[in-house]
Amino acid sequence: MTLQHIGTAAAIVFGLCVSQSATAQRAQVSGIVRNDRGELLTSARVHATAKGVDTTVRTNDRGQYILSLPMGAARVLVTAFGYEALDREIPIDKPETKADFQLRGLARQITEFVVRERWTGIRGVVGDEATREPIAGAEVMVAQAKQHVVTDGLGRFEIPLTSEDQTVVLVKRAGYQTRIRSFGVTEGQATDVLVLLKAGPDIKGRGYILRDLQQRLTLKPFRSFVAGRDQLAKNGDVTVYDAIIASGLLAKTGLKFGDMVCLLVDGEPRSGFPISAFRVAEIDFIEVFGYKADIGNSLRVAMGNSRCTTESVLGPKVPPFEARRYIEYIAVWTRK
Image (cartoon, rainbow, N blue to C red; front, side):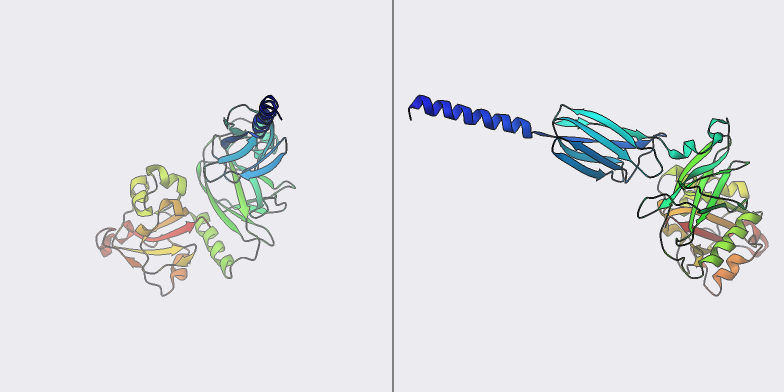
């Protein structure tokens, strides 16, 4: 073979390598998935198809996803439980391509109340925590108002409310563990929610705990209040004690901390455990009761012979003649 032939063959091989390299070149496609209120969506499913590629990833706890796809174009299907699917073709012309997506909530299409102005209430979707499939026939109850509805075939529900308040919702369905969630409701606005239920039986004795909770929330005794995580988180992820102090709720109700508090966590007494050990990010909502404000005595019965917590950091020793001005019970409900 002559040098000319060798050079020609080398050129052909080099050309093939360049062509194959260009064909095989891939890009990193990344972005963020949000809902139509601008909130990040975690565990959203991002499915992409392109030439020779069919892959799926889920968004992380910051709503982010990353895909490795060939240059050119890809078809992307983005889905999340409780939201409309979004199907879009995206061009991939850079080694690092950004593509963000926004999903619209299904709850916005439930019934005619969507077009009514200044509708106050809670609307949303109930689903299976593991499969992310909607659950029909789940009972959704607003504990304070004794209002309840049943989810439709797509797991959707709506509950109109008459006033702005921190609302506690109980969701139950045969074959699933009852879920307690707290939501802030704003006058003239709809609060869109997503509630996921875990398959399996409720913990033994939980039914009594939830009935007691409903009773306390219905009675709404004087010198007591309910506060949700969002309400307490305005000053950041501080301790529950610091959040209560900063919230202004004590001044509003005329209560203050003394040197002792009886603490319950998810309805169970927690002896010797300080309220200052809980951070706002760990809770869903709290109940706070002044001395003898637990008029149904459900918290007193639940505490039984358990000790209340003594914490010098909380406040001064409670004078007997001023006992009614001090907090006696705090019930913490976690986000589990």
